[in-house]
Length: 164
Image (cartoon, rainbow, N blue to C red; front, side):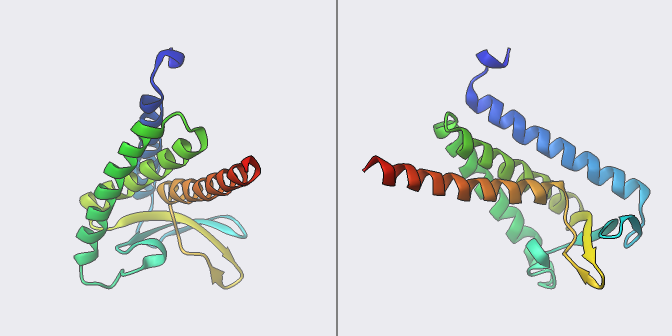
């Protein structure tokens, strides 16, 4: 069945799966945790419900609310652009996979911004008294997609260099 499905549709399906898993995980956390509640899984990892009104690493989290609409607008514009790129380049496996991950993550966080005014984060890594900022599955997908884009770019440059 998937063999007859156009590449573009498969990439959109992957992005949709990421959105669904992200939103389910967030709803489970919201339903079982109070804000700031911490459940230690391991000495370096906890589930902790936090709200991030800013962007990555709480960038602009204290901007008075304008960041909600700024980041929402950026997510919409970026998502439209990534969808266009997926339509044009759906046959480029690594590139399309990277875009699908980023698209799903961006839209997962966009849903939070529109629904709550902040992004729901809950995955918290820590060591001793040092904490990495909390994040969620959408953030993980965006990060994974960004890493794949860098890898794809490096492989493309290497391929161009060896073709000369």
